[in-house]
Length: 306
Ligand SMILES: CC(C)(COP(=O)(O)OP(=O)(O)OC[C@H]1O[C@@H](n2cnc3c(N)ncnc32)[C@H](O)[C@@H]1OP(=O)(O)O)[C@@H](O)C(=O)NCCC(=O)NCCS
Image 1 (cartoon, rainbow, N blue to C red):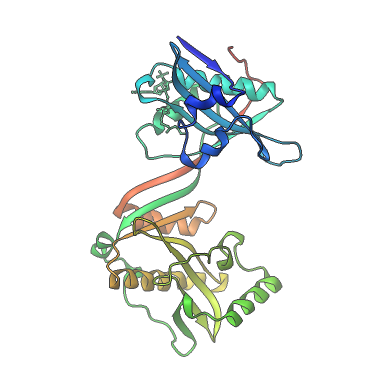
Image 2: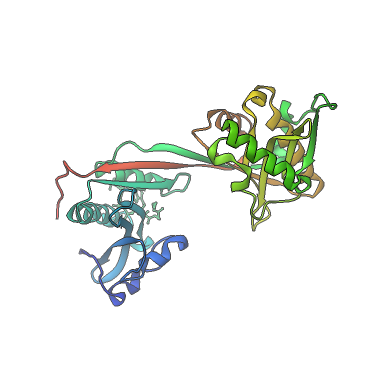
């Protein structure tokens, strides 16, 4: 028999702390001393720990709605209704705390994604919407396609130069900030200063026009050796010339020189040109292609079986 509980002591939560992503494990500490109030719903089957729904209720004054971070059923208990039951009770607990909406973000591409999506559908969530694509591609396959963006670039070398990011001076970065403060031309999430920490010096590079920074690709090397293309941007007036592609080619050339084989692109869907590029050129060579999806559940009209 499936039984659920909202643990209020560390002892009650102890058997369930491993039933979430490592990133969220700290939220399973009961009671919590965080800015958000974690909400745990645990499930047992015949008294054996079987699953955990983990989320959070924001404290007063916090903008985000209640959130579901993870839903997990131990493999031995899957496909027996545990996940569905946990979700229903989670809804009930959020509503009981005054929540009117729950949000969740999850990644597709795993075998169980469809099961999770079935639970969302069964329990009355809105249709999930894509937020971000994550693509890991094999450079050898990309080369084999001989895409136009990896062919020789032609540009006016008297005005434009491609330089490694490590050679960009503080004065050039300061000038970029001032230029942005005056004209607000850089997409907020793609400003290089937001991504510079621990950047990859081998593949991160920039375009200078008449000595001024106008485009950049800031990358990171992941623990498994994959080169992640974290942030790329070109001045809006240069975007139609494919200036970012010059930098992609430069980065790929450097990857090959350093015997790196895999590249990873994370593309927010609110940058449609980048998404179209990644889908056109990276997806066919993808080792994996995953999307993060966002989804909401409105609780007010809910009839909750308890
Ligand atoms: C997703 C997950 C929570 C589902 O848990 P569960 O306890 O198996 O869920 P349920 O038994 O309530 O099944 C829900 C639906 O999934 C589908 N499903 C589950 N297991 C299945 C299986 N082995 N084969 C086919 N369909 C299956 C069914 O469609 C089922 O609905 P239905 O019975 O009405 O058809 C579980 O697979 C899991 O913990 N996965 C790992 C963590 C994860 O990825 N979580 C989601 C993102 S946070």
